[in-house]
Length: 509
Ligand code: PFF
Image 1 (cartoon, helix red, strand yellow):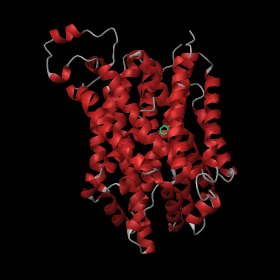
Image 2 (tube, helix red, strand yellow):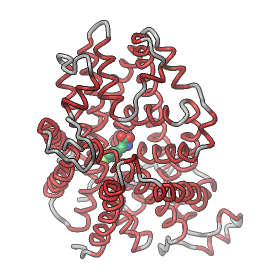
Image 3 (cartoon, rainbow, N blue to C red):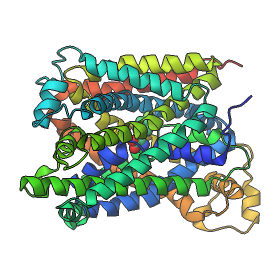
Image 4 (cartoon, rainbow, N blue to C red):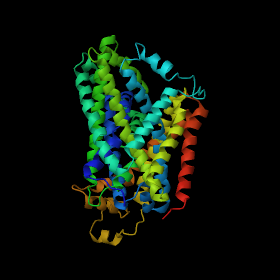
């Protein structure tokens, strides 16, 4: 029997769970800070409304219409696009391989929270003691066993949570979505009631409009929208394929997007209010205490936790528990999507698909547990997000807008209906919109066609090409060309080859 959600709520929670993750609490606030503070919310909202939500509707509609996971659903659009579905899943695989390592750090830090083991110098603790970071990406310097241990625990939890597919997931997500929200509210209340909080919030929300002229700010906004909504991973297509035929599409897409962005925004409030307190206590301006990337959750936050006047350990435990719960349903959504796609094509047993996926991702992830792991994590993160996800997004639009040759398109009927405006030239995008509308409580208009046919491919395409050009001028992050090639371009090339192999493999009936 085909896998199904047991209720609409299970689907919505699972999809929200996939979207809300470490990205909302750990990535969004610093990306926002680095890209113009409050002004970043403008490109972010533009990216969300003009591309994020339209693509979410597109992915939900594809999965729902064809009842198939990403590769097979895209293969229904036009046969060769099955490759794109596999490629999307592989990009997700690259992301989840390091994402699980960040979750392993969270597991370790959850343990350290009990006695605030990070001590006074949290920076030295994180880099020198915990990661034992090496000088450069090419000096691997051996594996960090505490991180490997955390990684094994992470993968065991992830696989257990999806043991029986949508049936198990549908139950687990009630906990992994609702509990972190409760913790987040506790952290916001704690944050805004600390002295100095206002300064932190002002810093978060005061726009620096000059930033809007920089293409990098727009690129950051688009890739954060993709990462955050989990679009371009093949996940939302697959999750929507588990829906019952009569379920809604458009409403669900808006709901998931709204819940995800509310979480990012509120996550930012919690983080920046607390940073304001840190600045207040240490007598430094807020701009001095904000650190990018992993440092925020694993250096700055532990410092603040230790400073708290009461129940410091409790807040440490809550914080890392929240990150873990946020992360797990994002991680397992990708495994579930990968496993469903493999099962659909190769008809292997679910247990084998799940465990096989977990073991491969764990082994690949070992590179991130070495002493050079943080460097590799940074390079892979950059390439998967800025090249992988964006390309999948553009090509999905192309597939639907220009190559959609499904037989049930009736061009004549469309014209006969008197619908002759320029945006409804009968490429098959119109058909997919009509399908989505026929299932939904509230309907979408031609703005959606416009986004899928022109706006998204052009805007994302221009950002992508500008970025590629810049990459040829300078290597990413100053790690050197060799590391950039191995962690970036080579990974992408390997994924393309594997996607083609999977596409060409014979389908088992
Ligand atoms: N949407 C997730 C987040 O914002 O954290 C990103 C994600 C990572 C989704 C890894 C899926 C995944 F496997």
